[in-house]
Length: 112
Length: 115
Image (cartoon, rainbow over all chains, first blue to last red; front, top):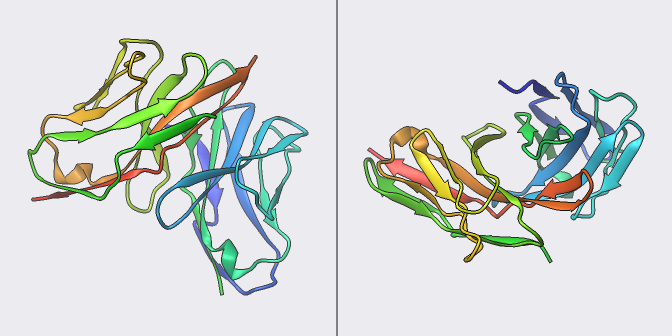
């Protein structure tokens, strides 16, 4: 059973608000990822990290930002939410030497 | 570049029918290959994997064989159940060198199984 947690599971928020999506894992994994999943189910990598103080942008450009101050924690922040940010956000982690990734349950964000 | 092509859905089957979801990929080297499954309202779970040519991954009655010559990793199940209704993602792991690399996901195939 993977130990990676995302909060909140669901979030409805107004335009212009600042939000932070939380992702934590207790497996000691060095690598962590954020994916955005569109209504058609396709997954897009928006951020990843190979360890503390390492963050990289993924294949899909995103207005969100991430930080990695602790190994277990990889929060994603939107400074000013817009309706175009409405989506499902999935966090994942994996260990060096392994290629398998473990996923959280996701955060479904709706910006109204 | 690296890419994955998955059979488009939705796929609708009756219970006990045979399932095939095709997946082909383009990637440098010999990537490890994965199938992930996403049940409604959930995140992704690893379904099965194969790490080298001719390996067969299997789990919960699902199977997929790593075909290097055709760069394919088709998912099959002999008899589907209603509980198999989910979205299935094919994903090669592309290694960029050293310990760096990422999973490349296909667009997902939605499977609905009717009683």
